[in-house]
Image (spheres, rainbow, N blue to C red):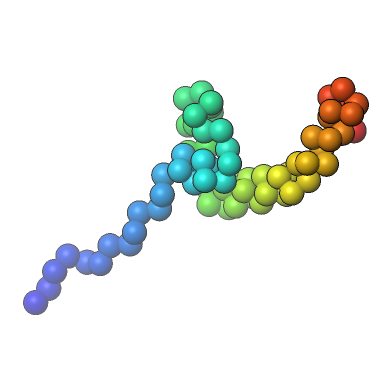
Length: 73
């Protein structure tokens, strides 16, 4: 007895992956969402890695912004 070939699970939509990672997906324009939806798996991995590293130093960067009046250094 043969049936349909096993299906691989669909990856979650890019919006869901980015939202879960903390990106403000609902604030992006359609054009921005389109660009993000076209990322390769490797590009997505890099983007999520950079975001996690930025988040890891977020409190320090935010404190500098508050102390220095928003100056970046």
